[in-house]
Image (cartoon, rainbow, N blue to C red; front, top):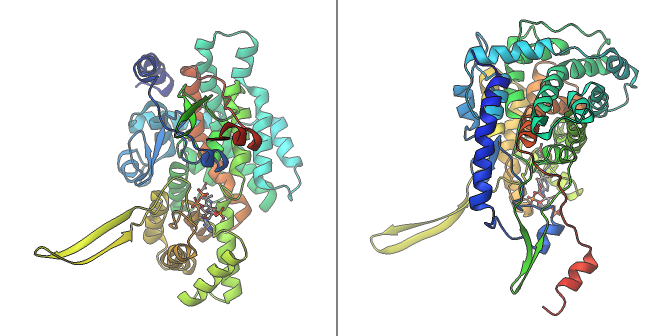
Length: 483
Ligand code: CMX
């Protein structure tokens, strides 16, 4: 039975050759242009990064090495008696591009359980945080402190040859992922419960153990939810804030700020933590701080808060479509976003159609195709199976029917359909995990799988320091004066 590290070691030389070939044969190809609008517009749509584990298709949503979420639900091993994919299997897929066997997944579960203990000073650090410190801040603090254990940092200080960096990055990544349930569980117990943290069960899978540390492992449906949750929140290609901040992989693609008759080559793009050879702990902690922003992972907590506020304001979960519309408009007119809706990459397709009788055109029109995030759909299917009559789920479904229309009428949002965060809170609260401030911590545990898989490859492929070029407004004006 071949283990993950052995398989990775076999794959690295092949991938290095492949990348060498791509750079030699395709290195001079142009991936795209960069306009001044994009430079001001959050770099939306700029193609400037290599991310091996997943690609986000603007129409189809996320694919992990070509596998969609429904593919993963079908092909990745499940726990005995369970149906949802084990996130251990997804990590294997992210690292190797291959679907693991059930035995290989078991190896990962066992290894993560064996590496899960926290150093006592990190436990004490978490215990000393005031309960009023946001769980995400405690999370990032604890991960930063774990840097004390970094094998990569020690190897670097000892002068290890850079061709070997991937090895210690792999070891740190496995340790870090393994320790996250203990960090997440401890924060939850301290802030919301009595501070007593149970121990990890060495024979069980990662999601069972996380559920146990939180206090919900007696409910097998909750454990299944966590397996699904950790799988679908893991990776969303490289440009999102948590992945982009923390971990960098960048190719030598050349960008241009251009107008009709001038091309100004610029150095590729953005400045990130992992590319400075900061170790996996420091890099991931940076990513967590990005995930804690309300336009990104904190939307996980904001959605349920917004729905509960709506329910309280309207007095019940039995509310009319008209009342919901009014509440949405109130949010929009207050200059706020509707949390859980919209997407920076998924875009709505416009389909034009016509109806003909013989040769004559009798009707033509266009419609906006639905582009719901498949991560939302996977959670909706889970809810339809496990909690179809829950009043809060019904409210979430009602919102699904109403929000896109209102956002369309509002006219700003490029994709008015729900994203991953629109559904997760309602599932967690159904099983009793009602503390919204905590939700993004679970997102963070999951995100470690995607970004650390990439960081291992960044080191194996020798990705360089990121140092994009920036301009001032005055410089942009000067650049295009008289043009
Ligand atoms: N409610 C109200 N307005 C919205 C909106 C929403 N849900 N989504 C987008 N808009 C607005 C934007 O604020 C922007 O307005 P301005 O021109 O005044 O700045 C305009 O529509 C165009 O934005 P966009 O191109 O459609 O979307 P962006 O790529 O700029 O942003 C996202 C994407 C997700 C940040 C945005 O849709 C949003 O703020 N959604 C609500 C927060 C949310 O759910 N975040 C979670 C995303 C998933 C995750 O990372 O976890």
